[in-house]
Length: 301
Image (cartoon, rainbow, N blue to C red; front, top):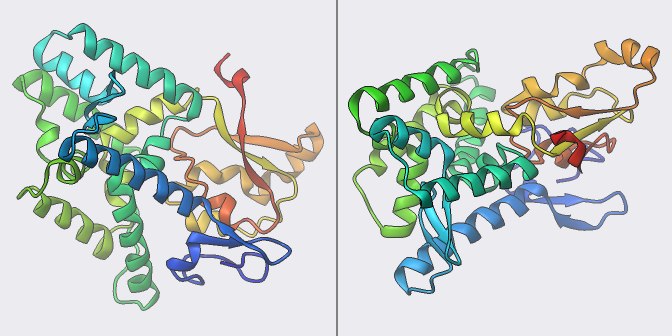
C-alpha cells in the first residue's frame, strides 16, 4: 500500500496490499494490520497447541485462560458469572483484576483488534461489504453505535434473571475461540450468519452495535494509557475516517476545529473516545504523519 501517492481508502486499495506499507523512501514494511494479524494468530496458535500437544503455555479460551499458570479472565464473563451465581472464586477475581490492569495500560479495546479472532474475519467481511456498496449491489446501512450500551444492559439482565450466561450461547468471539482450541461445533453456523449480515447488510455490525465484550473493554479504555495522538500535520484528507469503522472517535481530525485549536495554541491531541480499538489503520493510511501511538502514564491519573 502506497499511501504517499494514493488516497489509501478501502475502495482504492486491495485487501492484501493493506498488510504492507511503503515508506517515503520506497522501502516496504509490515503495516499495523499485518502486525495485528500476526499477534491474533499467534495467541490462538498457543491456545491450540496448549490443548492438542499439552505445551501448557496459554491454556483455555478467551473467556478464561491461564498463561504460564497465571489466571486470565474476561471481565464481561466475570460480571455475568457474578450476576448469575452471586459468587466469584478467588482465582476468577485474580484473573479479572490482572486483565483489567493490563488493558488499563495498553488500551481497552485493543482486545477487539489485537486479540479477538472474529475481528480478523470481520475485516474480510468489511472489504467484501465495501465492494458490494461500491458496485451499488447493496446500500450502506449505519445505525447509532450507542445501541451497544443497551445490549450490554440486556445481557446483564438476562444473566441476573436466568442464572445462566445467556450471551455465551451466541457469542461469536467465544464460539470462534472454542473452535480454534477444541474443534468444530455446530455453533459456527451462527458465526457464518453474523459474517453474512456484515457482508450484505451493515459493515462490522457485530463489533459496532452488538458485542458487549468490546463495550466492556471500551469502558476500561476510556482511562487507559495507550492512545492515538493527532498532530497539526493533518491536512484533513479524511482517509482515516474511511478506514475506521468507529470513525466517530476521529472527529478531532476535522478542519472545523482548526480555528479553536489555533486560538488555544493546541498542536497535538489524543483520541480519547472509548470506542477506539487502537487497530492502527488510521496510522497506516495517514500520508501526513499526523497520527501515531503514544503511551502516556499520566492518562491514568
